[in-house]
Image 1 (spheres, rainbow, N blue to C red):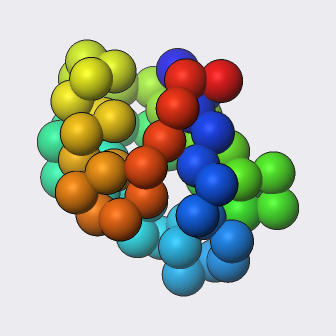
Image 2: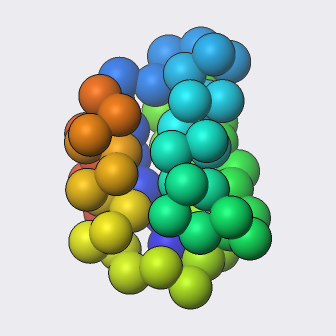
Length: 64
């Protein structure tokens, strides 16, 4: 899945986003790109679960 994350603006943000996603699915493959403010995720978790954990972490996201 690809998500747009407006609040992800730096490498630290990208690490926080990755950590949040991997808290739901430790085996998730996450490619966070702060320059594009986007993340690509390969996971077994539902999109709703990922969106919820990102919002809780302070990074509201939307499907791209």
